[in-house]
Length: 421
Image 1: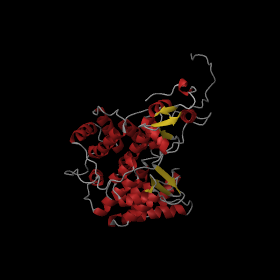
Image 2: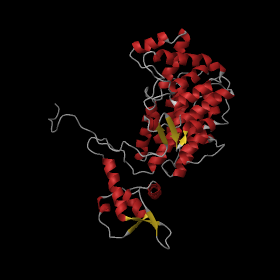
Image 3: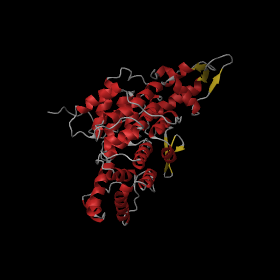
Image 4: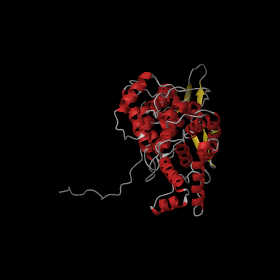
């Protein structure tokens, strides 16, 4: 991929049209991205009589190149191109959509793997499942088994991704086909690399079935498996969350898919992102132990902490993901105590602050009622969101490289300063 050069914007002969290759070189993108610009209405193309490929008007291409450079540089103090054009997820009016389709309806009717394929390709593939090759699983498990027993699930997932990358000589092939092949192997291998919660767990069937045996030693039932599969599908993407932005920055620098996913996992481990469901899980256990949410909420607020599992900056009403999961959890008999505890938390807090339940609270009800550890919600989140990270990495590979390079607003002492003694 050729970088943009100063002389690329020199005046061209009037009326001369550019080939696809020339246009791609001028814009610093892949040829296929040129056609993506056409489909988005950013460029117009014309096929010459007797010609096999499209041509482009030089002035229009040069104007787009200038615009791209302005966006990359940003205005003073703007922080660069922090508004990212995307065709993956839209959040609007307390609903969210995957490629224009209501994400709640999609997740309610299709498996996680089918939703992942839709995010990646825009094509629904009924019955698709992801298989982990034995060689990949061996590599990942060997690396994960070397970790301390105190390692978190996200630690294990990140190490598994790095180990897989080290063994993949094709990891730097960033073509769409290669990245999709990587994704279809990476996700099931991440699941298979996690230690089973009970001996003899079978690694077959849909991904949710395989993940269940990594989260709890209890036998699976259809209602609980449906909750898990739907949760994975609902959490597959959520626009530019912090971890997804990290993935896009990595992809902008042309990091391979494993490295991009590792960047997302690193951010996910923060207590304000993927770990939030674990905090809600522990809170629910306290409510169940105390028999009421009142003293538990009082202690959270007394310690200066936010009540976990409540409110979401992108939704004024109830998180649509939570609404779906709560509805499914009502069909799981053993979830009733945790559901009542969650409702008690919402009602107790609503006396002072009108906050709605979010997906972290719904995940906590699920994990607490199925005998899972507090970290299970974070594991579910990480596995699910890997699909969205791959979708965003793919989209970013089609954009101009290194476009997300904000300029720092320096506020330190003005130079020149004397050398320190």
